[in-house]
Image 1 (tube, rainbow, N blue to C red):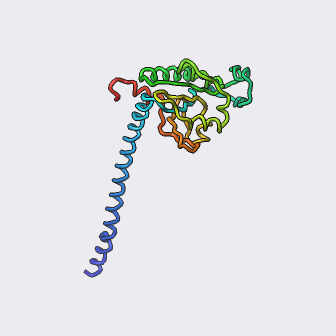
Image 2: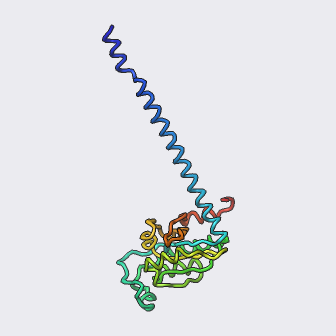
Image 3: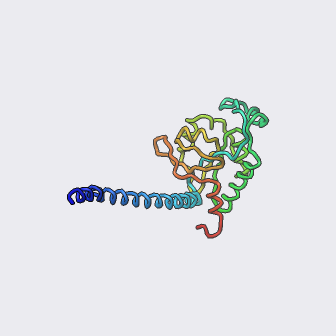
Length: 216
């Protein structure tokens, strides 16, 4: 009888084990709720970012739309205008990328997002993305220069208008650690000390969702 009693005590969970299991279950529940809240916050962030752009006064960094593959171009800030204009030796927008750029511009117009100025890297794919989306753009080879891009993104935008910088993923990744997909936009903000941070990210599907009736 004694040995049976000892076996039962050994098999039954101790009080501290029960408490530990309850604690783990409680933590798991809290984490599940936190994950759900984060998912909701992401949706709210997208809506808030688009509303903010509708009001103007923001800087947007846009990565060019989908491009073809191939070797990297031998272009930099010191390349000539003729070299940038020669698209035959560059990785250009694919037909899908051209459609992405046109769609992006259409969504911006449908959402009544005001644009003050569009500045694009002088490469064919960034220039073409800007023109297909917004109709016109200033091209500037200095977008290869990280310090220039940092200063440009840290500048305040004029009230009621948005400034758009169209480049590759490399510059923003170097400055903030954020890597954008094709035709993905980042709403950026200066910290007043020369640094910048990404406030929100918007993919092409986000604009499409926002343009649908009843999304708001």
